[in-house]
Amino acid sequence: MTTESTSVPPSPGPWPTAGQAFGLASLAPRRGTTDRLTLPHRPARPRSGVLPLVAVDCLAVFSAATLLSTAHHDARLLLPIVALVLVLDGHAGLYRPAPHTRALDELPALASRAGVAWCLAAATVAAYSPAAIGPLRLLAAYTAHVGVVSLVRSLLITRRRRIARAHPRSALVVGGAGAARRFASAAVQHPEYGVRPVGIVGVPEQGGAPRSAGESGLPVLTTTEEIHRAVIQNTVRDAVFLDDDPGLVTLFQHYGCTTWRVGGRHQDGPMGAHMWGYAWQRVVPLGERRGLPAKRALDIALAAPALAVALPVLLLCALAVRLADGPGVLFRQERVGQHGRHFTLLKFRTLRPSDDTESATRWNVAGDRRMSAAGNFLRKTSLDELPQLWNVLRGDMSLVGPRPERPYFVAQFSKIHAGYAARHRMPVGLTGLAQVHGLRGDTSIEDRCRFDNHYIDHWSLWQDVCILLRTAAGLVRPTGS
Figure 1 (spheres, one colour):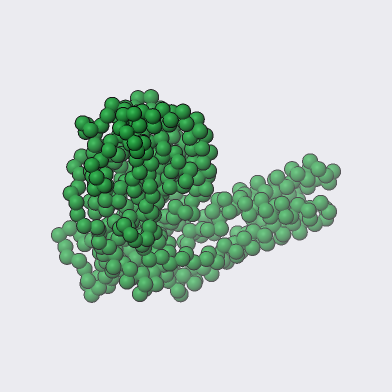
Figure 2 (spheres, rainbow, N blue to C red):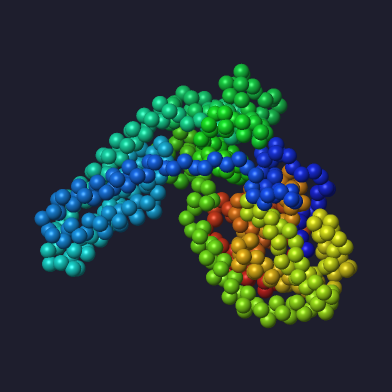
């Protein structure tokens, strides 16, 4: 049994209700129910603003090409230039600008990428044709491109602001009651930003009572049921976060709402990306991040050969367990994976529990006298975890991610530790950021929760590689779990 533990094990208690932890405590469903996340879901709306921006880039290229129309080879370059501009601008996120970005904010990014495209076009012509594009003609084409794209995008942005003022999007503001009311007041007084607060999600300020709709103009919502009703009745499209709360971010993203973080002092983005002085940054859902398919590819590329290379070690471990503890070499235990789905985790058996209840609810077996010498060795060297490579190949787990826990403890910790259930936004893993910082065994669940959510919020494929290298280095000085 792996001890994903805390120093004080929680006592048995009821399954968390919908109002606890803003509904995310129930990520892991009861036995006998569906294994899918039981959150109301509204599909994301198609992004109709992308196609006009793509059309603007195409128009800019063709407008610039009219200055080069005297050369026959220039026509053949149009499609490659268009493709290159679309790729460069798309990769830079220029087809999904912040809702309040101004045209001048985007000009450096647009101009630099247009310059790269036209310089590559000129170099290609010079390499394969005697009729090279002269520097003046190239400069004229580049200037025309930047002028057209800036002018038309400016018109589109102006139109978008006009629509936003006329048809503001309903939003819920998440944060302390005082700060949330001040932000909501600013949004109401400046409708050009297209945000219409319809409620506040949070708790009242310390020492004060919850404000009613009559006192502040906006109701304060404190339970999942209230949030649910507000989202449906007001057709809420945005959730604005003044305080970080991974659990609520996940909840609103499952509702299909766009989530925003405001008020931070170190947020990336142009100066124009603000809401009346409040820094404004979209919280990108995990599923929209670039590189996530590469994470699965990395899992398969490393786990498959690792399982093959470790086969002799697996056989020796199985033999040792069989001789020391009798039949039943593999230990199967239900764990909670991504989005609350249950799966069967595999380990080498290091201790035979007295019954299923002990297996599901006993927190720590370290020092148990029933453990054989072979079992103790496997735990100290973490060799008992090797069969989980099969879980990685099956897709139950990833090589790197928050460590999975049993449903009983997921329910308890989700009630005790804010943000614990939000760990299930990402595939669970063999190792993780918390583990390479020594948070394994009988260590703080609160600390692990903080590390796990930090890993998810700042995930990159390179960070996975770094964590795997640090894990491999840590195996030289095993401490067990």
